[in-house]
Image 1 (tube, rainbow, N blue to C red):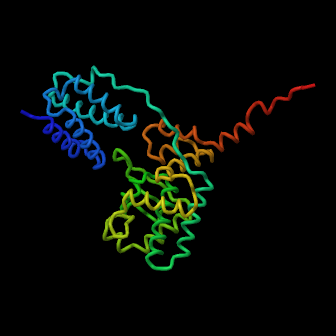
Image 2: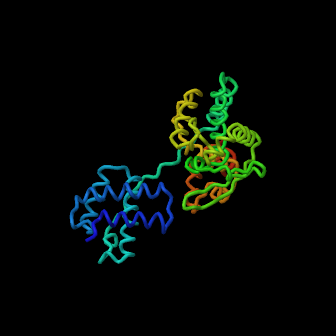
Image 3: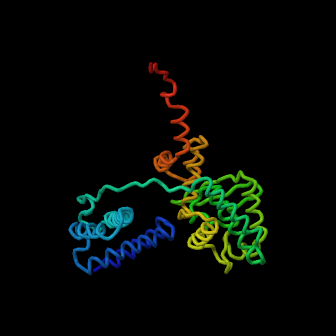
Length: 308
């Protein structure tokens, strides 16, 4: 008789070879499903509505809404697979209400002047480098941050770039996004392009040997965590009190383009969003554009009142 362990193993294999999900998605599914398995304590009711209901209540006690939502989605996908394999008499999710109110915080952005100060410090560190090692680190760090801000790409997309994805003759970047969706972005700023060319020339042999465009000091693929440490380092050097994350460069990219009157549909495609509704959240954080509209274009400015 199959156990929940066996079913989970079969499902993860299905996700990897049939659905061809990326490794991060499979890792998240594995963590979430193993957690549910541990909660059931080998109970024979592991496929029942009551067990699921208890587990979901327990999730809400332990985690923030965003995490709960992801873990429920993992379970829901697993039970859908079980239903598809005709291993369930009835899918318990059909009779479970898993909806809940979730706060939707606005995306956090980096003020324009802070980005300017951040980049200034990056280039100053390059000028002040006292060793070949420091110079090479600065060249790489500049290329990473300039590309993050120039394209609004996700940190996972940046770290996964292959040498063949960067075409510095046509000035284009091929990005592999979520759901195996591809998009091509143009590098339009000459300083960003120069930073990428210098990085590529400096690390060409190591890049070829590693197989990834961005590499760490050990000449292996640059990790998300390394970029976070890098950003924290330059944030402190720049005297910026705000906590800055890689994803905030993406938020800032979208918001600042909106403030330059770029059509939201173009921004949607550049960010790799499937739905325009995902991109529309940035319309709520474009503060300088909002100020310009309310100060200069509000119809109240057209009214002349006789106050005598």
